[in-house]
Image 1 (cartoon, rainbow, N blue to C red):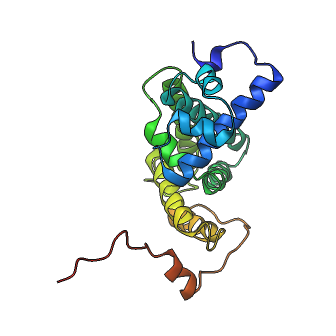
Image 2 (image 1 turned 30 degrees about the vertical axis):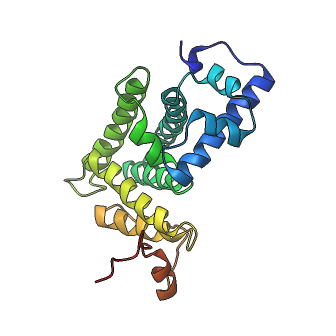
Length: 219
């Protein structure tokens, strides 16, 4: 039985579960999926047994974090579908999903390590795919987006926005909005008022450059 299928937790147990998940989120964002359950317990300030009672292994913890993420993305897609205008529906989902990605530094790590072929994760993945397909098909049929736009472009859009976020979050935390907007214009989506951002300065760009992982060898 997975943690999500168990009966509701007592308030203190739920606080511990939330603390464990938030700690894992932070460690995954900072270090990638290299933290052990013992390290997560130590960082969270709870006993190892408390962690293992909630999550028998690291995979169960990653899958629980994935479930939270996809529950959010499903809610965003459902809200976007409420828009009568197909173009604005797609635009709403793209911007809201990008906003979520901008604040979620651990998302890529969790997606990379979640067991996407296991139930119920596979069902959530497929359900989100159906929602995204519907948003895209409506927008294309209405001529609100370029005719060759596809669901794959939605995921690529989030990958590209995520790449900007990961490089700029400590330097220009709203920079992603500018490039999210540029991508949507390229997709042919009708423009709507958004919070506009300026291009980064040369100094900020320099700060986003990768740092060397080691010194070059001497001749």
